[in-house]
Image (cartoon, rainbow, N blue to C red):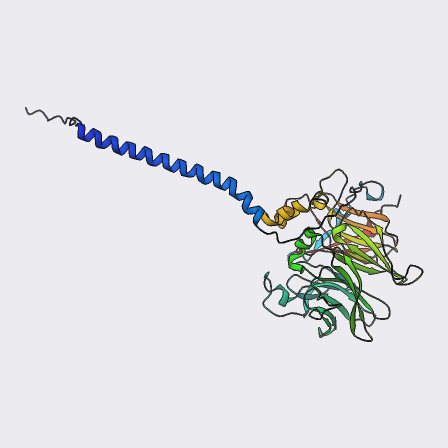
Length: 416
């Protein structure tokens, strides 16, 4: 019987041992080199990253300013859920209905894709397009256009300010539109960069805000973080068809509204969370005063209420003992500069708590009532309130719907 041969390992020779040892040493040495290189790279990154950040120029040149401590939500600011009772209308049928005009059964608004929409009995149609295609991108927004503030004048024309293109008169029956003023025309030596809102006097004079002569609408976050004060109010004279500068040196001049007597303008100064009053007539003529220096939020547009006051929409809230991004950064220009170097502000804002708020003020800036959505689930932010006999329509610069609240169905808060 043949026995199978047993395989035996060949004894390792000195040469083999030396060769294998060399390989093992080589691999170990190579591994050590990689570890060393990784440590050096990590150390360089740790040391150089701050240097690179410091040496990288900031896109903004922030100015120092301070804000008073945010107000407590008590009295007329006591939280409620009235805004939460709103309904979302035309959801996912429009985007960014910044400003709203209600005229009987007709609604008009401008949207993020550069359109002016007409809504009648629930049907949406395009009334006018002020700019040109293509639309929908960051780069083409200036040529596509972005309609913001709008009003009906006494002749029934829709007067619209497009932040990039200028001031327009639109025939609501035909959609035909005529440019009253081009944003390419300098006013007092400066071209407007962020035309924003408007209000119309009985004689046809149009007052409009230019939020900045430095930053356009696409870079409005830069303006807010910088805190610069090139915001102003422009006035269009229908007789001469010329535009002049009426007020300047404001920080993000935004919503604007004539008082009922037309003796003064009420102006929202967004970056300072203030309400200003400019006197057009009377003993204080041509003077500008702060009538509320501590609004409970970051204000956007202002419109008359059906009960004699003025509604102000809040983009974000400011509340005592709650973190406010704007308040925290106000007196830290270095921090605002750093944030704009390394992170998207939209990303920061995305993770801030949502809270919907609108307030009603009187002509002296006193808050007389407030509507809240403490969870922000229904109305997380408001650009404008259009009050049609107690039916409130809520606009937004970025949300894909309008809000609507039949306020008369609910008990109003009483001024304390």
